[in-house]
Amino acid sequence: MNSAPQKTHSNLEATNNALLSFSGVGFDYENATILENVSLTVDRGEFVALVGPSGCGKSTILNLISGVLEARSGSITANGQSNLADRLGNVSYMQQKDLLLPWRSVAENSRLGLELRGVSNSESSAAVEKLAESFGIADVLDSMPWQLSGGMRQRVALLRAVLPDNPVLLLDEPFGALDAITRSSLQQWLLNVLDTSNKAVVLVTHDVEEAILLADRVLVMSSNPGHISAEVKINLDASRNDATISTSSEFIDLKRHILDLLGNHEVTQ
Amino acid sequence: MNSIRSRFIDWLPAVVTIVLLLVAWEVLVEVLDVQHWLLPPPSVIAAEISDSFGFLMKQARTTSIETLIGFVASVTLAVIIASGIVWSRTVERSLYPIIITSQTIPIITLAPLLIIWVGPDMRSKIIVIVLFTFFPIVISLVSGLRSVDQEMVDMFRTLGASPWQTFRKLMIPAALPNFFSGLKVAAVFSVIGAVIGEWFGSSTGLGWLMKIAGGQFQTAKIFGAIAVLSILAMLLFAAVVALEKWSLRKYPPTAKRVIRLGES
Image 1: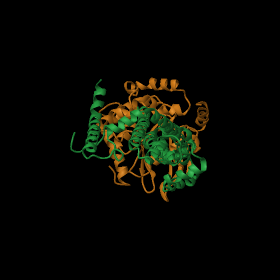
Image 2: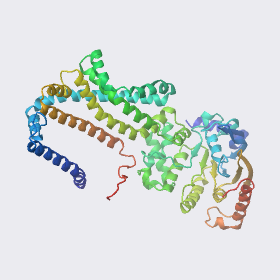
Image 3: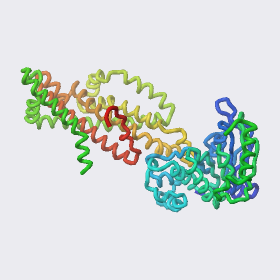
Image 4: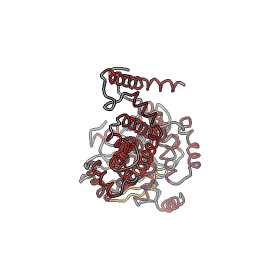
């Protein structure tokens, strides 16, 4: 089942290194233009963050990439798939809410994506157990979602999203609903989990610090209609795993710069 | 051990209330000297039940078989139609308005017609039961299947789920709590449906027995039949509750969250 996308993927790599490309995309909702002429590309192993004011269409971009919504104009290619129906199921997408099924245990929730692909229960359970340790959920595999804290639920939701092992991963404010301490520890953990994965990652966030901490590039968006208004490359000298990074002067400069870019277009933060 | 004791404590107030009511009934009938053919005291009813126990059980057997067949037929039909309504807009538009307006027809008035059309045998009772119970099951199932958030459906789509997989692994499990609410109502209705069917044309069953006994002023017999009917309905209800508990054993607990005013 995995062989077909892999093959198209290597064909793509010969011509273009971008795993994800989004070019000249427009999207309307109920006669209002939400996005106009949005273009972006994400390479293999690259982490891109989208920041912008509420309602600028950040999440819409992820819905378009994953195939949940259909664009009015432009073209979208993810992992070599440009048809909407082919992208569905071939792009990993973690929504803001954990969306865990309350009647399934943690292990059963985690393997949902594999199960829907027809992978046998024993095989998918083995895959869950293999990653459970690094996701910090090994002790709660048999628990039910309502017994878990918000942070644990987000870990399970991320495991469910990444288990099908798609090269493109979309994260929509994954830690938005968590308290500051849990969020900070999960950000560090996410960096470690994704460090060696070589995926193309797009993160939507309203938290500028989170964007700087996690991303290689930050795309700043503006609204009415939503478009990408600036791009900031993040080249931090200090290790991102350093807990004090967010108080370093270069980090603060970057933050000020991005906040300025946001402030030029719309009141934020 | 502990759970048996706590269950006993849960039931105790209801048991005490029933015993007190029965005692009051017995005493009032004797003190006020009410004629037994008008209102027999519980002791006379109990004696009547024990005297004609075999006969009552024979009638109860007929009524139970009708009830069970009718109930299962109704659930089957309701599941098919509710699924059709959720799957297809055409099915919804052609069936849903008819199903809802059909509920404005008093079903009791259809029973004599059914006896004329299909005869006084078991089939007419089963049809009456289906007419009685089908509606609450369809309504609860349709609203249950539709209770799923669009975000959940989108999540299934991004994981590559087919519509059938979304239906089976998301919508059906999400609909179960609602489905069982409808099923519990339908379980009680199905016993009523069987009795009404028997009332209008039958030669066996508890409904028939009540009609005949009523014509002869055998009031104690009527009460005996009512007691057996209540037990039948309670047994069917308890069976549905047991099935519900088992089916929803992994669902988040909700029963504990009951708002109570005035006491802890």
